[in-house]
Structures are given as structure tokens and as C-alpha cells.
Length: 515
Image (cartoon, rainbow, N blue to C red; front, side):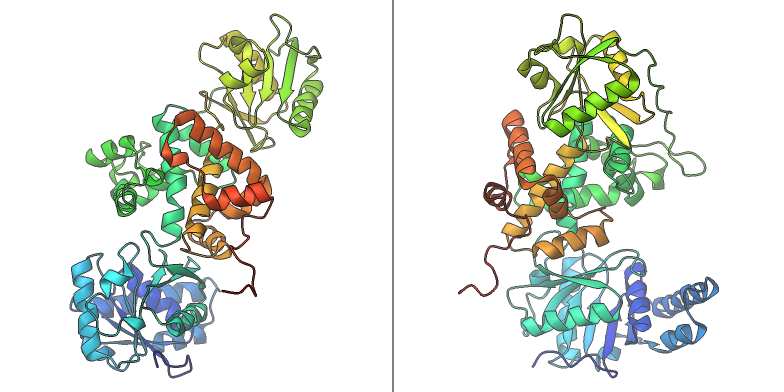
């Protein structure tokens, strides 16, 4: 039998007293579990215990924790001077440097030290679990237990299984995660596991938009925050994490998936990385930072005030047309009701998947006097508008004035199929579908992981269902047809469910189906 019951005598060993190891120790002790902490560096484990003591004291001061609970948690933490001190542990979690050879050596040593039923888990964020345990004799007890930094604040734990892992091990690790106050998600061993895999779409498509000069990083971040509801934009987060962390992660997952174009890194990001402009930590990345470590960003330009005398409107559906008509009416701008725009009348368009160029040509509007606006994301919070190349700037300014007439923020970008947020969302949902198709995680777990691990306002599949799987598929197919780039190939998971009119969370087989 692999693994002991999770009871009051259950003991966890933690190897590594760095940021992750001490965080795991803290949440385990607060969860009522006994913890033995060890580190190869002399004194590091004791320093880590002292750090946890300070964190618990701070929680008491802020009235987030009772003093008795803090004292009890600290009393559950003991220090071992070597790996030998983990001999009686029921579970050992390794949280050391991301080096495969060192981890393999540690796991081989643990096999000689620990009981045969002791579960061995790695907190690695990127290295294959199967490779870490490749030289072990009892591979059925080896799994991954990946926490997110900072551990005390991040409520997600990925429980990772290999082809050899006993199902009981995954069940027990999930129970342990819950005792620690984390939400466990079960993940198949694969590059980036779940959250770091699914999160690549947000980064890489944001980087693609900037490299293609659709919009600068600050405008993309503004749209993602205000129109998309995210706490931070992709460039803000890359600078916060550091390009020395994010770029190698992007590059590693791209290479680990055999250069799948879905994960292709950005040339702009590589150049910043090679120049050692790493973000906040170096004072410059995609943004420049001042003495207070705040980004130095030019203020947004004031919106024009001169409204058009008349406007011709077109929307991809009744809802979009109604939004444009109501905006014009409230601003006191007459609407040209002819089938085609009268000569000289600017056209305000609300396309679904097309860029402004294709939209104007499709409705016989003058591209030079046309502007497209996103009505799917940010209509009430931040509108995204774009014009074809060669647009008449005087006409564009009157249309911007109309879009901003009710006080809503407006960001103008360069022409792009899918604007910013619809394009980003389609790519994120499409990759999420592929992850489900490959069996890396269940749909429900994927959405949970992205909300807890990356602070998404909604899971990528939830967002796809809200917008409609058919819309997401149309957007992806439009991008694929426009660019001819395999990064936009539609996921079979997305395509089938869109064609069938099913939720993107629909499994391949319903419960009770024969195998």
C-alpha cells in the first residue's frame, strides 16, 4: 500500500528552506500537520522557521489569526539537520533549486531513507515529474505537488501524476492540499503542467499584439484591465515577475512542446532579456521605473470634442447596432439611415471578427472615413477603436469624440482582426480547449487553476461559454485565415463543441458511459 491515512499522526517532510519551502511549511503547520523542515545549507532551516514565526506574529497583530493558533502551528514545525531526519515522514515535499540532476539525486537518496509507503512529491514548476523519479525503484509513489508563490496567499495546488503514479497517491495529496487550505487540481505530467501552460496564451498573444504594432504595451495593459477585468495587464505582470523568469519559461515550454507555434516566444521580449532590461528589478523592462518603483507612463491623450454632424452605423448584430445608435442619439448626432454611407459621412462600425479594413470594404463604406469599435469587451468601461491604414484623421477625430461623448474612456489601436480583448480571449480559450483535448486537466479544474493561480476574472472556458463557443471559433478561424499562422489553428475540443452548440466544459463522454 502506498501512503498512510491522513490523521493526527501524519507527518510531512519539506526539503528546501527557501521562499517556497518555508511557505509550504507555514500552510502545512496552520493546517494542523506536523512538519519536519531541512535544508542542505547550515542554519537555513532554522532561519526559515524564524521567518514563519514572524509571519504568524504579523497575522496575529492584524487579527487574522488567534495567538493560540499561531503558537500551535509553530509548535508543529521541527528542524532536521539532514535528509536522515525525514525517515519517519509519511510525505516528503521537495522544494529545492530547479535542477533536474540534483532533484533526481535527492529522490534516489529518499528511497534509501524513507519507508516504502512514504509518498515523494516535487514542488517543481517546470521539470517533468516522471524524469525526476526516473531512477527510483518505487515510481508509483512519486508525484508532483506544485504550489504557487507566495504560498500563504495563493490558494492553488497542482497535484501532478505520471503514468506510474498510484491513484491513491493523488487522492491523498489532494486531501493534504485541502488540509493546507489550498484548492487541489489534478494534472497530467506535461510541460508547464496546467496553469503555467494555459497562461502562455495570455503572455504570447499580448506580446504578439505589441510586436505587430497593434498597440503599445501601456495601451494593451489598459484595455486588458479596464475592458477585460484583469487585475494587471500582461506587460505589467511580465515586468513584475521579471523577464529573467518569464522569457526562459516561455522559451522552455515552446521547446518542450517541440516548437508548437501556439507557444512561440516574442522577439521583442528576447531582445529585452538579452539586454538585461528585466523589469522592475532592473528599473526598466517594457516600462521604465522611477525612484518609487512606479512605471513612468505618459498620460493618455485627451479625446477630441468636435462631434460629426452625421454618422452612418453598422453592427454585426442587433445588440451592437443598438449600442451605436443609442450612443449617437445621446450625443445628438444624426444617423444616416441609407443602405450605404452618403458621400462624406463617416462610418462607425462594430465588427465581430474582422479588422476595420475588411469591415469597411464589406459594407461599401469609405475606409478612409471609417472606424471600428469593439462592442464585446469594455463598452461601459473602456472602448477600443481602430481605423484602416491611411484614415482621414479629421474624420477619425470626430468618431473618437462620439465614442467618448458619454465620458467612457477610449483607446485607439491600429487595425487588427479581433481588436485586443476578443483576440486575447479567443486565443486563451482555444489553448484551454487543446489542454482539455490532451487530457492534461479536466475543464472544471482548468478554470479553477486560472482563477486561483493567475487571478483571471473568469476561467478561459467560462469566458468562452459566456461569449459563445461559436464566436470564439469564428474568431480563431478568422485569425488563422488572416495570418496563415499555425498558432491560430482551431482546437478540436473548441471546434466540436461550437458546432454542436455545447458548453466548452462538456466532457468527451458523459458519466456512466461504457469504456
